[in-house]
Length: 353
Image 1 (cartoon, rainbow, N blue to C red):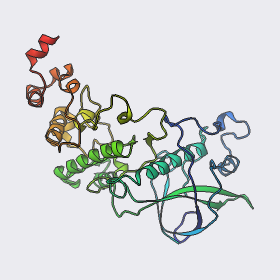
Image 2 (cartoon, rainbow, N blue to C red):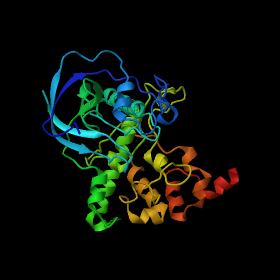
Image 3 (cartoon, helix red, strand yellow):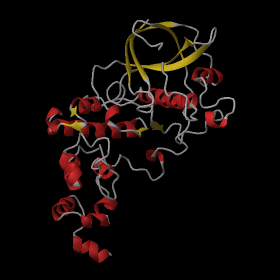
């Protein structure tokens, strides 16, 4: 393993390729799969594969070299157990191996896709006031370095990004600390008020990043949210509207002047898209257990949290949401709350039908 404490890497600045995959455009080179490339059977040497299909190059890396000294290593996910994952290196300034090359996956192309998406996400967010170094870690650029291999005289280039080191835990870390015999012990988690405050801040942050920086985080998982007052995110899976084939909604001719309220986005029933009340959802161990038994408890929390939000932050609840027919299936209490916010009384909606 080349990434060990004390190792010095000679790194150079690098311009990442434009994002591809997931709506960002076509892949710059043809896909190479081990299972349909006779030259590389499934038992192929992954280093040989990496050497034959190196990372995408945009322009020659900067000639000026800097020293990056590794002072700590954290592997986020274990190979073959958690689906592979990035190496997190802690160090001071003057790799990234993602998936093992197996099962016919073009791991080099997938690594490039993640690198391009994450690097450009941070590039886009840096100049956005209220986002850079607040909702996301401070970003110090994309870099590359040559790594010796077990093939004599041959090196392979590795890409990485440098981010601010935050001495924080993720929400998943908190959940794991409270887990005993594969069961989360509620009394070992932060108290419910704290958990809901962090969830509120996370959803507000996700909306700010999407609207202000035009970066949509598509993996809002506990492992990607650091326990900060505003939440901080990891961006190897994101939609970057600067490179999307479709424009951000705020640039359309009929665009709304503000983002929709989290009430509408995360409402746990139709017409919302919230999944926090699903028992097998990644957040199930963090939200109040009662939400999993009765989704209306989350709906009540959404209304209590955002119904009186500061003007100019979110749109008022839309007529489409307030008068949606699905609300007729909810409790009288919840319907009454929605009526106070502008929903038409049941008899008026019946007359409209």
